[in-house]
Picture 1 (cartoon, rainbow, N blue to C red):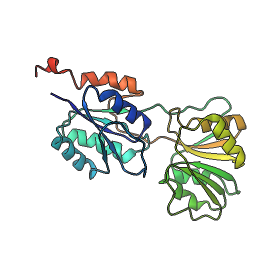
Picture 2 (picture 1 turned 30 degrees about the horizontal axis):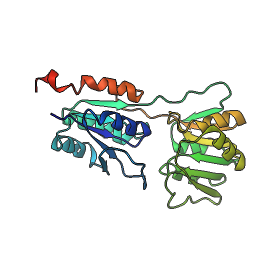
Picture 3 (picture 1 turned 180 degrees about the vertical axis):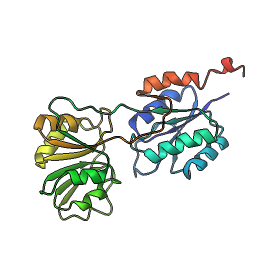
Length: 253
């Protein structure tokens, strides 16, 4: 009997987890389909939405899935909520992979806010040179503060572009090293960064660079996510899975 695991992905850790589990189960990795050219995943991939919690629950039943893993981005609130509800509907175990957030240390100049709109307001009325290190779905909120110059970095192109008079755009995919981030901040004379508290090492370089240069950082806090069993690392979650998908001989199959 082959155990079936569905991983809701979109993060580096999701891809790593899929690779780690592929030898012991039939793994499918689900991507939202928002990134135009996702990196190779190494396991079968399903792209696109399910049609909410009910649609996901139906998919889990139809495919005979044994375990659902939520390894989406820490800010994918709706997907995580749908996953938890779908697991309840389908009477299926669910685990979450949730990398820890960053914590400010000595030398950091953080202003913490709850939303992108709050971040735009936190920039203040005077014109500033702002680095938006956000996904393309969040940057529209900054049209409410058109007095600033914006440097916008994203994996996919921002379309339509921001309705502001002064913005530059960079297409890039992490990881981003500290030295590269420092050079970028200096080249564009950035005096404030807006970021989500994504956690992990891949995009921490900008935090370290900002600290070294004394640059302010407006940090969007993490949203509340469903209270389900979770682990912070791929290794920890892989170890937990033995309690949910047991070897065949233990089940008497």
